Image (cartoon, rainbow, N blue to C red; front, side, top):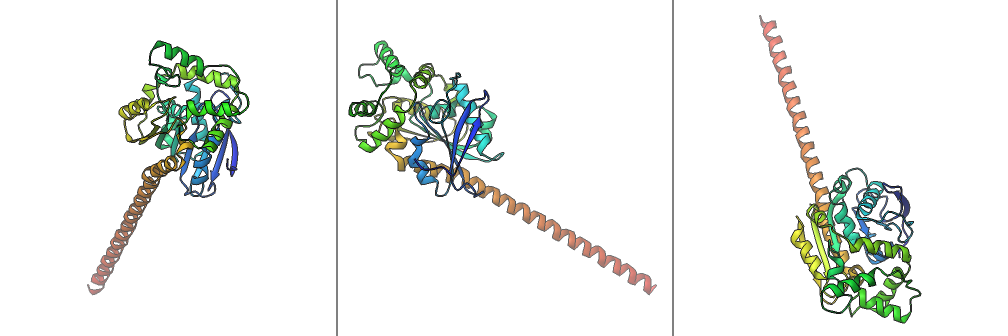
Length: 335
């Protein structure tokens, strides 16, 4: 993954410490901000392709969810904790009132849904990209276990996703399993290996703890409160969060600006379709961050013109008063 221009630690509401990276044009006050939230068992490395591309002309902020990557594990594992963490990252990296596009993949998207009603989120969110995610019924809808939907599949899926077994080294068999469960059939070998190394680096206790949160997930209310322009992306071969979730999100979001279904792609859309995901982020920045800045500039120009007009009017009034005084003086002299 790219080397960050700056690293810092954000402290969440319960004291949890979060590793945060800032990439790109960190010293340019006009560079638009993008915040990236990764998913279950991943890390900032998951966003490597997006960071490399966007860092050329954006300030890109990526952070490790608690227990993942370089963020220490915490006893608190809940959607409220995820929301607290995102708020802490936004407060630590953005100026008061500064707007950003926030992109979340899988559990990162759930983080956005969990935070949608928070004042700290609403202060900073200009638009959102939700990749390969869902708001509820994750285990019941997952198709990792290749049998007909029902109680047996749900029970087996819960057992598989909640396993405490160590993943071990990245072997050819491990690559085949990970590709089947999380990626599309056409995923390139280097993409599969990159994802495997990220996922296998997640401690098994952390993996298990967060699997229990996902098992009971219910963030439907958070979707309804996500009142910013939001784009949704999903792969049609996603076994962990199948397209049924993306379609439900698109139907429930107050301001959905598009649902994109990617044929043959799996759960790891930012890795499997890096150009498309990056392009979606850029579109949101152009439409909802840069456009807002341009509107603000136009408002400032209009305000300046009004001020100039007031000054001109005041000068004219002063000149008229002076002319009146001169006329009065001449009248007195004539008398």
